[in-house]
Length: 449
Ligand SMILES: Cc1cc2nc3c(=O)[nH]c(=O)nc-3n(C[C@H](O)[C@H](O)[C@H](O)COP(=O)(O)OP(=O)(O)OC[C@H]3O[C@@H](n4cnc5c(N)ncnc54)[C@H](O)[C@@H]3O)c2cc1C
Image (cartoon, rainbow, N blue to C red; front, side):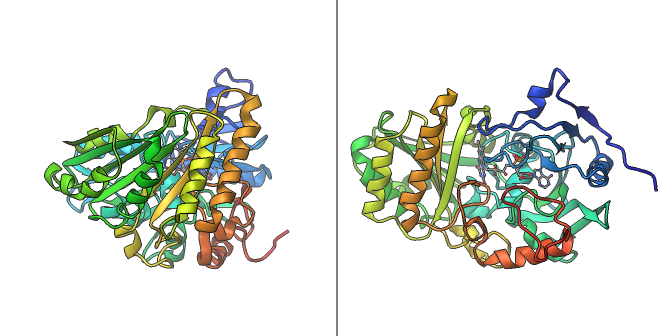
């Protein structure tokens, strides 16, 4: 049989653009692959998978480069990068869009906005739509329209077949529906290489935004008021709160409402009345301006970072709020923050076993973030996140698979709860030889040699 060849744009360590081609969003824990293939079409993806299998070459899949733990990179081995495959086909007749899996959120939002439509997805424009969707996809339209994966209609994937082969398959609610189930929250890199995603579209025009800032003295009151309000208010309103380090001394709640400023003002009353806000604004903007507002340039730029996260299923008691305040008082630097985003609404209308995304009943998703400049600051920053995660764990549940953390020992339960068993069965069916693997990948049920 004819041997497979690597096709597409190939970058090796000798190439002058290797550093750019290699670098992910997180510069911490860097990796140095021996080959990166930028696939230009689906055939290149098939060839890359066959080539890797025939040559027994370890490999990883990459699209938007935003994996917190750089699971889309490896030392030595091959990176199969699909970011050059990024076209979109909008169909306003049946309100759907087929997006090649290399597109990032910025492109997706812009092209959809030109057609007066959108999908609910994340905030940073450089995040890949594929990595985000496979893990669930949380964003500023989650409460009215659900997770990104809840809007998925079909995916195309290149899977491993036979001893050394590769095969393109489609999955949706009818066809290969177990693989489709697993792709809605099971996380990237586990089953195959996604080459396109088809989503249901939502019409969108103007939305209303708000921002409320408090000083450090209002820490407990501002957070407690927000957490008892944000998951329960009108489902058209999704919001987030950022608790910044004491050095910055700010608590900032912001949100997006699919409705008028007048209605938003009424909904915001409990928040506006809490403590003594130092800054409040509310305004109506075209939807794309809201997208740009939540797209922080600092999130898109590569940096030395450590993040972790969890879900909150019951409002945090006072002692937990105090712990957050203590950690932010002793934060390693100005960039250390704790961030929460409100959930429920359409997210919790779906049962926890209906898709692989398990934490449907959570009130909020939560993230612990820090970034730093010099390598010798690494230890302190990483310890801060780890100690914070452990200190809050009595009050939290699991962790969102898109906020992976290599220090979580029982990651199967943390990411997948009771859905892990079924995920392993799907893995066994579609990837019995465990061709797709990384440090926290789902293992097949049987051990293969
Ligand atoms: C700054 C920043 C902002 C973020 N904001 C949000 C947010 O608002 N909402 C949210 O829900 N999440 C958010 N995330 C988390 C984000 O969803 C995950 O990091 C996601 O996995 C990124 O996908 P990617 O394609 O950009 O990354 P990559 O690093 O390319 O890939 C991530 C994972 O998916 C796998 N993968 C990549 N391409 C494919 C493919 N074609 N087929 C199969 N597997 C593939 C990789 O192997 C890897 O395991 C954010 C992350 C960062 C760093």
